[in-house]
Image 1 (cartoon, rainbow, N blue to C red):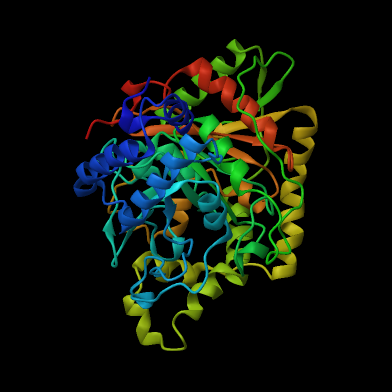
Image 2 (tube, helix red, strand yellow; image 1 turned 90 degrees about the vertical axis):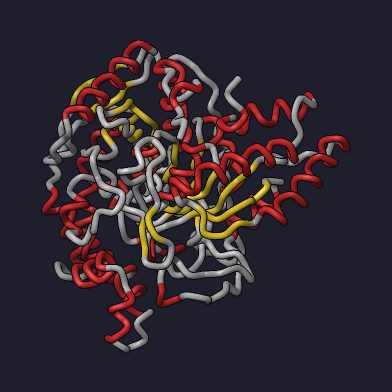
Length: 464
């Protein structure tokens, strides 16, 4: 069994059912670990432990009564960006300091209804528009594997808390890699669902690039949390009525064809990333899969042109609205935020962008007619500093191989670790499936997790 501070949700539930530990005991140990880790990683924006203990006591009673729900008693942290009615709603920005939410995100409603014990909220960069997690409001969030480096962004607090053992499950959101980048840098598992699978709030519920999703320390945990989050919601017309319930049952991959694409066109990889990705390919072959190295005709120039056109229409303009027409308020923003809104919308018309996205998808769609999944690195680099300015927006995005799968936002993408770099920072790969074929990426991910046996043991996790 894993150390109690790095239990998976699946292991925790088994222990609850046997009576070996209780939800209150697990929460107590999780919060001790959080208190130990926070001075180093700074991943928490709001401490909810008083309400969490009340929820944990209810969970204990439900296990005694035989009325336990799917996530009963599991400690969980939510990304600060996802609002909770009456709680602070600041999105990492001084422009919103002190504001409180009027609504609760549907994902949080479902998680609470499933019995999870929400004990805190995790950091994100200002307006979630960076691949590092630091802000004037909350300071610098650091990677527990090596505090000199970033846990990634924008769900960086979630990734750091999971790796540190400060929580068992976490929520994230992903509009350009914001679940998958922290999953890679923090050695955890994250899932970007296809557009519409998980309900959201306006305006981003209608943004095909954007998805709220689960993060955890195992493929099974991520599947379990995703199963709670899915399904139609009355207030989101984009939310899909089909509820795909995922399994992380480990099977061999005989008969499965996997395409391996190292560079997605013209990304340049750190040698450690390349080496660890090739090790993933060998592990997949060991499970019985056929793995062929392929190329895609994408370029970073094309990716940037499409993404900035899209961001100009939605995310960039949404952030700029917070200025309320007062340009002097820009000085309250982070430099990376100012750079983001200045860069957004500087390329094509919106119509040209939509047509470009369709052309961009074509080679991937054709490839996935021949293969069951595509595997590629998540992040090309291993050395992004925790306090990196990140105001060279294109420079930062040039190391993130995540954006293509937001441009084609209807594909499911599971991010899992692939190994460690020499500086101790983890690396990761993405498993990309056909549109809305969610189970396919979990099948590959579960087999890979069992074969690599990296993050399934206590030795993987940082001691801090």
